[in-house]
Image (tube, one colour):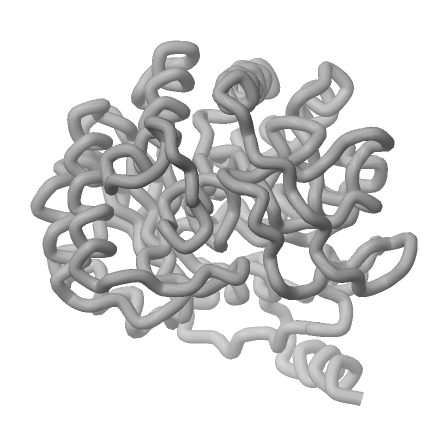
Length: 364
C-alpha cells in the first residue's frame, strides 16, 4: 500500500535502514555498491550507509564520502538503479566527530568534536587493525561554521547525485549527539550548557541544509538514551525534554521525517512527546520483525518501519514478507569486508534446495 503524508510519498511503508558496509574503496561508491542497492528496491525508501560530509568524518575504513566531485559522480549509478524500480533513496550524512582514528582519515586531517574529550573504545583500521580512538580537537566557533558549511555542500552534492533527500545522522554517539549529551559537551559558549544551547548545532545544521536544498528533502535520525559511541546517559527527564524540544523545533522547520532508532530502552513518554510535537513522518527502526513492524504501524507512533539486517541478507525482503517465506541468515563474517560475499550474493527466493545449500555454506 502506498504511503502519502504531505509531500512525502512512497510506494509502500517499508524502509531499508542505513547500514555501514565498508565497500567504498578509496571512499568512492562503486559498481558493487550500485548492485547492492539496486537489489533491494522492494523498499519504498532506502536510506544509504553513513556517508562522510567532510574529510574529517571518514572515521571508519572504506566508508563513502560526498564532499568531492568524484564522490558525487560515483553515487549517480546508485540513485539511477534505485529509481528504476520506483523507490526513493535518501543519503545518510554521518559526521562521526570524536569516534574514529586518524589512520582512517586523509593525511594531515584530525578528528573533531564538541569537546576535546577522547572516547573510550577501539575502532578498526586497515593499517593496524583495532586501535584506540584518537583524541579529537574541540571545534572552535569558526570550526562549527565550517562543519555546517560542509553539511550544506554535501547535501547539495547529494541532490546533484540524484538523491531524493538527506538524512542527518544524529545518533550512535556521533558529532551531533556529542553536542546533545552534557557528559561529552562541556562547552562554555552558546553551543554548551543548557538543553537549548546543546541543541543549537543540530538545529543550525538542519536549517542551513533546508535553506540550500528544500525542507522537504531533509530528515534527522535520533536514538534517545543510546550509549553507543561511549555516551554516558544523563538525567531521564532532561533527555525526554531534549527530544521533545527537538521534535517541536524540527516540526517548525517542516522537515520530511524523524527517524527514531531504538538502540537502548526508551521510556514510553519519549515516544509520546516526539509524536505529540512532530506532525510529519516518523520512522521507527531497530530489532523489528515483519510481525512487530506491522504492530508498530498500527500503534500510533510510527508512520513507517525500517529494517536493517532483514534487508541486508534478503534482497527480496518485501517479497518474502508477502509470501511468508523463510529469511536468509546473515553472514556476520563478511559484514565489513571488501568483496561481494555477504553483500550482493544473498539468494533471492528460489527453490528451498538452493536456500538450504546457502545456509549450510554460511554455518560451516
